[in-house]
Image (cartoon, rainbow, N blue to C red; front, side, top):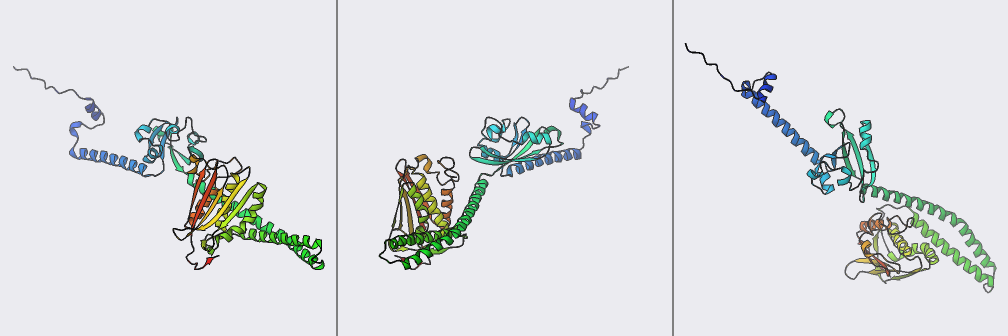
Length: 401
């Protein structure tokens, strides 16, 4: 009698045991289940790719950061701003690779967001060298594996703040203009009385009398004051950018120069003007161009604390239909390494309280609005020269002589 041979089966693998525990045998998986599983894997892979593409499509830097400031994920914009590959950013501290700092950024919202589990947003001045950012921090909330991390969104607000400061400066100039206009009106009344009584006294005194000559000088001084007040009122009057007309540049300069000449004289600074004959008219906003001239005169005077000389020259360009204004001073000049930055907003080498760093930036913008250009030449210790080129008025058919 032959003994029956027991059929041997291969030992179960770990996967087989796991499948058995789940009630599904590896052998019992149907093609439909395999296809369904494959589709699920493809969907997960596609969703991951879409998430990453969306993450990278955001133009502002976005990072997932742990509670100890380590970067867990970063988008392409973060890498571009940081100048580092994304893979090299992972695991590094955000303030080191992104902000280029040795310690955490001031007012960083990360810890506050983790503590309150609520979004937070702060503005950080000079977060990166010469760059300001708005940092918005978002918690992950109930997601367990990310509970100790936050999402940080960084928005560069450097240019926005510059524009805000320009607006504030413009509003301040408007306020000063209104104040100057009010003062000028108040001065006009007593000045008119002085002039009227002086002229009445002159009529009652013989011209040969010594007092008549003194009264004549008083009359001349009062008339000059009235002219200065009139020019001040014209300059302080609000104008729109669209308020443009054809005008004579030397006449525009002479309207405001008396307002500044007395201050320059007290500083020991002489002003010399030189205007070419038969200059064509230029087109523009006279008040705004006068602001440019005052800015250039102010800069020149501040470069000469011990006195000196400023020369203003207006000439016609020989190469094209334009007029050139040259403002030259004998001051201390501008260092070579600073010359390329003098038209940048807020750049200044002056002491605190002497300037905001906006004068030349605003002047550059005004000249550009008029289709012109402004250039600077300087040599340290010898002085500076600014040349403003403005196009000739197309509507002007006459020349001023």
